Length: 241
Image 1 (tube, rainbow, N blue to C red):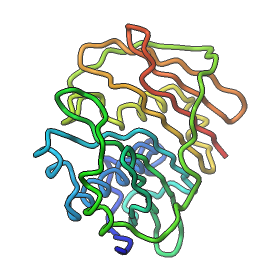
Image 2 (tube, helix red, strand yellow):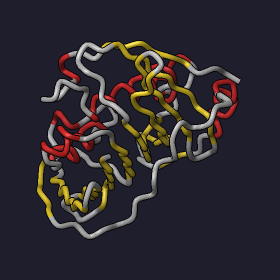
Image 3 (tube, rainbow, N blue to C red):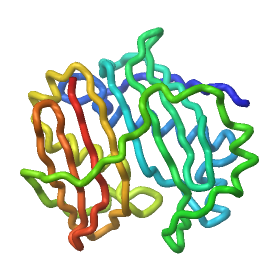
């Protein structure tokens, strides 16, 4: 069994929003960055997969933010893998400042063939993964399975150059931005923490026009992002404290 790995960072100006606290997208970005760095260091990162014409894609993500750190705060992000099967891998995160837990996350990943764009069996990574597994439970509940819901508002936006990552589809953080762009500034400014869940269902590609539909009931906001062909691409849920 391996051990939890920790990475040190400082919250820099481009990571904060108008409240001078790290935005939800930035907190998620720190988590996803350490996921890539840690996977590379343990032999199953994107560089290793590309030799097999494969890549990693995020299928579900759950994040709880207890407190958004202020600009120039020094933070540590812990990460570890504790579950693996032929179709999915679970990677966990803790963001902390000293002994204070700021945020925690659970992510579920699958492997995609870059030519067929189909999910593939991850059994070829079994030995490498077994050496990287950590005997530590996930810090929060697993990402929720989000069901279709009725929505009261929607907007459209095209998929443009700045949305696309190295997998040639819309980057995870762009989905986070789409969700938070629809939430009122008062809600964002006055929150005392939040739980965020994302289900990534299909790829959004360059040139498509996306519909971002949402509804709010009390402190819970729900979202469904679909393509111009009517295909559901992503569902999300944000619950503010």
